[in-house]
Image (cartoon, rainbow over all chains, first blue to last red; front, side, top):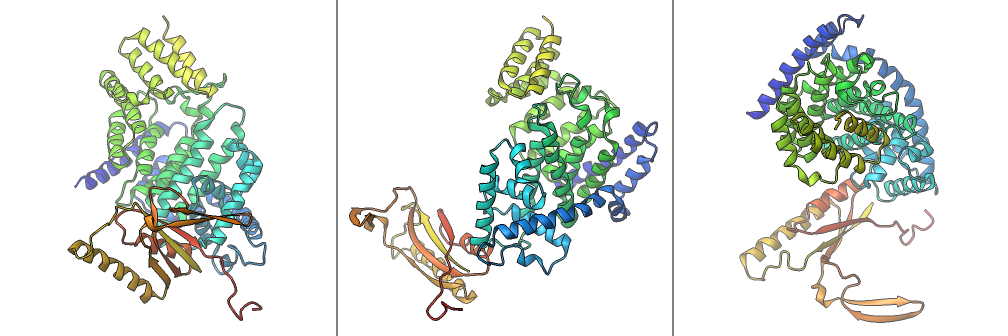
Length: 399
Length: 123
């Protein structure tokens, strides 16, 4: 029964999201996203729209890059005239090739590090140097990792074939692509390698789009794609002129990339039209609420809390509980939120826990405690953009 | 492609006394598994080993050898048996490994290096 409830919530929410998007955007977006989004929500003509999307055109272009990557992999694994993994590709269509290559890259017999490196190198077409720079590892070390992984694919007989249970592999693929996106988008903003990391985030988006397209029965890929696009849409608004992270509530929403948001809703429409709501789709639904809210104050925080409840049921984690507490506070209950955060004290070494706690302490009038918590948070992060934001918060809290 | 499935578990796992109902049911599961391998055409061999406390290790070093009581690695899980199977891909081998009727344990799956058989050397 609860599953039905989840679906109803998602549908109701999407419908309303589209309606609210229309009022929020009508003044500034010329191309009638309201009509557009309604089309999506009704799940009509979705394939035509998808074909028209600019992203697809870029993907078609990138197919050539991919072919080169495959040829490279083949050369690397066929030192003794062995046909190598490329041989099996000859008879198959390009779209199938790409998804099977992606699924091969995240085969569970490969280590997590190898899965990530292979995905970016073989399927993403990034150079070894680009990948090494993005993950701050030595290029030679990464090269060895790739060679070892390709050797294992050949010598252990890992097949370039659709797995019998694509669902399990699609779930692994979501994890890998989500990790790559996060590494590109969230982890190390502002430390001078920003451009390198945007390459990672965009690679993750393109690969997720390919996978979501090729595996329409795996709605979580669409959910992940929507999540990535919503987050990517805020890229230009999330770093201030001083290099500090700008929190969501303070971002200039006019700077958000409307076309990324639109593509996000397209992907989300497809993901939520299935009868399953997985963790990636639920995370995307939360981001969608932000994407259509005209301001932080006008955000439907109560519904975000409900999505977090569903997310905790689907994928329990303390990080989600922490985020849920933030939403509880925004929904008007900072005291309840603070209690929830205090209950997560296993996070004592995690800067974000102290930062969230500091914010809630300030809101509940405990200014001195708040300043101490910000200082603690600041001491626990090595990310300069985050540290700059925390220092500012601490200053603003005054004495 | 041939694969070795190396079966390891803690010695007290599935340690049923012969003659009991549990023992018979346990053995029936192994017979069934082995028969499935035979029926699929994948079976190339396999045996259960005597308990690990019967193991003797011969260590070789630059032309000399020494003999020690016990297995070559002191680990919690010990090798209890093996299968050699012939299947198309690692995925098939992993699927067979997942069906091994041990209650708890590990199965190391290793591709066997192809070597030319008699008369095949030139082909």
